[in-house]
Image 1 (spheres, rainbow, N blue to C red):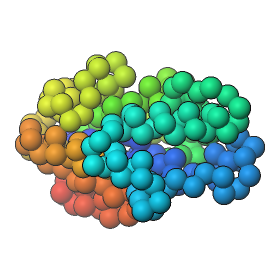
Image 2: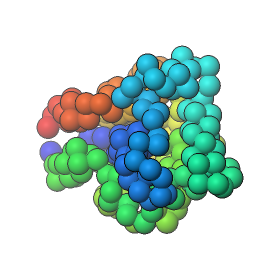
Image 3: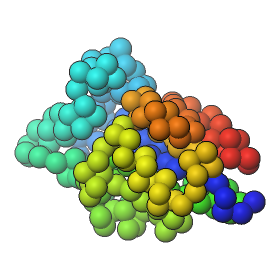
Image 4: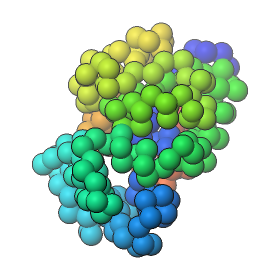
Amino acid sequence: MTGDRALILDFGGVVTRTLFETHDITERALGLPAGTLTWRGPFDPANDPLWVSMQNRKISERDYWMTRTKEVGQLVGEDWSDMKTFVQRARGAEAELVLRPEALDAITRAKDAGLRLGVLSNELDLFYGVEFRKRFPLIDLFDAIVDATYTKILKPDPRAYEQVIYEIGLPRGACVFVDDQLKNIEGAAAVGLPHVHFDVTRPADGYARALSMLGL
């Protein structure tokens, strides 16, 4: 297979493990007692009403995470005003700690097969920071990175998808976009971009489907 097809990935939650999955790492990094962080998002929505509000589109994804950022900052006696502080303090310098094993496998398989690779994120550098991205394993394998931190165009705005399709340089029908947020999947559908709604509780299934759609 040559570079006539492309896998386009959201970053947070798809390429990386979610903060819900790494509470133990966060608690250790911040010196919090085990079990302090109880919000679990999609892993336990019944006990995370703020997450449910986001899924019902009463608040934005950024609103959700800013609330959690401020809450965790208060737990350590600090005033955190941006998600980058949360991510960097919670996960430190070990970028590989948050890489999904399933993402590592899928990205490597896709690259070895000659597929083009893209990232379409609403907050890659906004949340993780430039230095974190530079250290992140596999980041150099991506042919295009479209980050709303700089474009200011958030998914599900059609222009976000059109931009990454343009930068990938292939017809949209030759691409598969993967995202864990339904509203972003609906945005892809609206512009005719083939897609997979990624379930963070079943990451292997999502990657298997995306690679299958690309002939792998």
